[in-house]
Length: 275
Ligand code: AG3
Image (cartoon, rainbow, N blue to C red; front, top):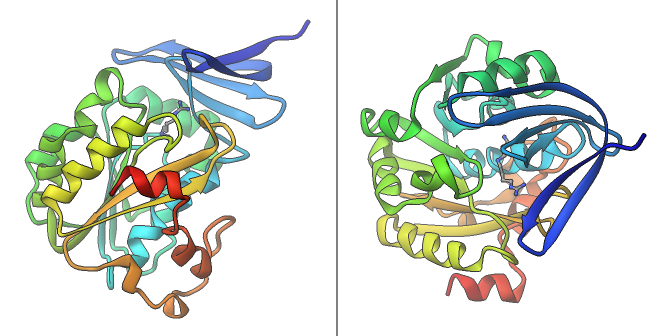
């Protein structure tokens, strides 16, 4: 018998993955959490029927949401991830020797628990002594912390339901205040192909708060359209002025110093969104 997990990526487009096992399926206070074994991508984390990450392609997203801002900053010591309960972003942040503390604030403790149990390759950083895991509402947390972080990564779900507030101008203002004077933040900002209005709005909002706003992309096979955007707001450092020959090699699978520079070069239609 063939079993297929299907995500409705847009009202008119689906992605299906042949599924060999359901490892975990529970409803938390916030969402329906699934961890399934797929033939193509290995173990996969699914929240409310939307693919979040999987063993095969997770490296792209987690490397890009962390190393790009961390290498834009001259000396990042304290980093924060909002969301990202699977721990992939924390694992990447800890590859930077300058990092003294990497804090994760995830609203759903069950996502962290399930990821620790079923996705150890992704969640492994969470038990590191430099990591701190806080189960709390990221919006509330950010408002209670001022002038504290060098780099903040917003590793959210799609802008529906509980994540809507993580794409709001008020939240970006609070992030600005939670960052130190030369701080940088990056948020995952969906597909340049399918989420044009969102990207336009988010860019406008971030530009009205941060002196430097830049968008970059990465290729993630299981996300709608493949091409995925990240938007950076920076108080002082401009990634376009970073000398990539000074970026050290890290143990990565997608990110390289050369790619750092190239990732800010956008296809014309994507460039037009943020004019
Ligand atoms: N955050 C979710 C990205 C959005 C994916 N959207 C989709 N498949 N429709 C990823 C969490 C990984 N730490």
